[in-house]
Image 1 (spheres, rainbow, N blue to C red):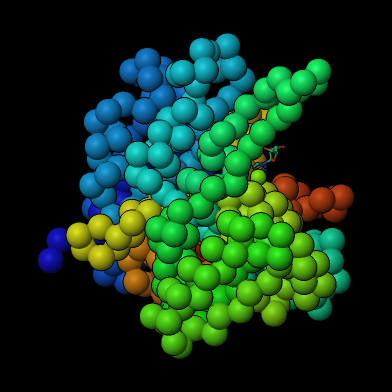
Image 2: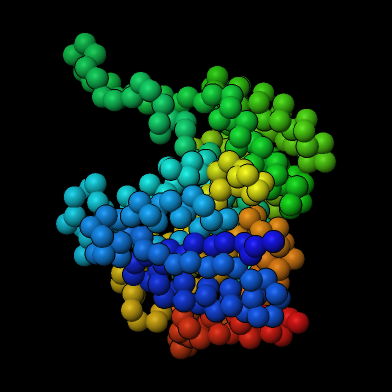
Length: 367
Ligand code: NAI
Ligand code: MG
């Protein structure tokens, strides 16, 4: 059997800096766990524009369609602000998401004990927290027709339409049940079936898909109540699935339960490929951070955790993903902090590469 394949797109700003640390982790798994990936690397965003005059070359797009998973750093930067909208770095990212049809956006909220007091919530509310929000990403009110600003009598009316087909709901529901099967087998679906027909259909379809996953405990919640429960006692949840709009809000809310932008990974999944693996792209939530780029200050953990998600959700290596997360936990417990994790504390931060090296050393210690 051939090795699993990984396309790395470091991108711009701190993207290449944090990706260099991920490369150390990938190399470690190859050398020490016999988990060898066929890694190729290419350009995206401003870096691709500089080389090819486009934020994503067709050849790169084709490669992304073929590999088992794409790992992306970040795109953009002030240098590219003057560019025409059609070639802006972000367009490279959007093209990847659209052409790979990545309809399920996964945003975990995971609390590392060493950072529990970094949260704005009480330590006991967040310590040990490990939940996953699945946001539908390619349909719903951001895309539904009719939309626009229209004249109506002597005033204007702004219109957006929440629209979901059964198949759109079904595929994101199925992806969420599959995730729940790899986690704690609990899924909570959130909509507003009390006031929205699209919510009624959503609830009905999710329930129907649930019949295929009898091991998963399915519950339903109105999204506004869900927002309250997420801040009151987030540990009641395992996987949450919701639509594009509610997911936009709830995933940002959940992300901030635990802390810093430099710690937040994400995944975007599409339909299963011939080998049964979903099309997938993994990336940190943060951007290219031009204010700290090139200074060795970036926290590589968000990107490394994105690779841990790839191990778990694309490569069926849940135990190795846990090993990597535990190594990160250990390094944080030992007091290693990049600048973003220090807040007002006066001590010296560690550099991007020192953080990566410490995580590799913790992986060694895990054997
Ligand atoms: P940003 O996420 O790049 O930075 C926001 C703040 O968080 C900055 O102060 C930055 O220094 C800090 N930060 C971000 N990641 C960090 C890390 N790993 N370690 C330590 N500190 C970190 O968002 P911003 O400043 O709004 O956007 C900068 C550029 O990135 C823009 O060109 C924007 O379009 C692009 N962007 C790209 C994204 C992507 O590629 N997915 C997502 C968000 C923004
Ligand atoms: Mg958002």
